[in-house]
Length: 135
Image (cartoon, rainbow, N blue to C red; front, side, top):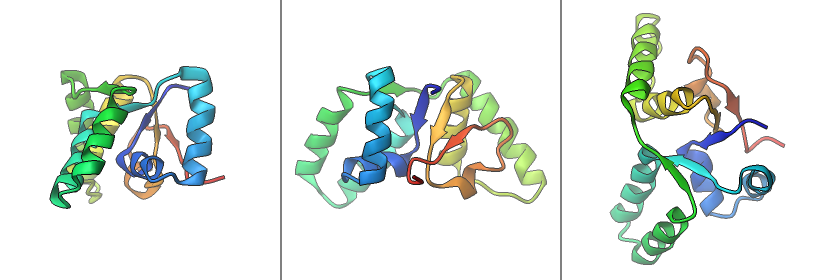
């Protein structure tokens, strides 16, 4: 099993206690001891909670983050993401900025990406996807 970055959708499923994702996370944690997320996913989850003014959930999320490894957007990740964005856009394939940055972070760290959103990531050259929602 390769080290894996959780995409925002899988992180959200995990936080809500989804059985499939929880099972995969437990298997992953047996080997790596820590879940890995990006600052982008941290922002996406936190901004959604702020929008709902979910104060209790924000505090729970902040406590959860203490046990996570959080990867920042580096220059290498930006270059990888920008290159793929340009390549895909020339082909008429548009991927949102958050997704392309998350992909860049995963690839610059030589990691798989745990996502159930295969449609957005399947066209990214070199992206290794592991769908934690599939059995």
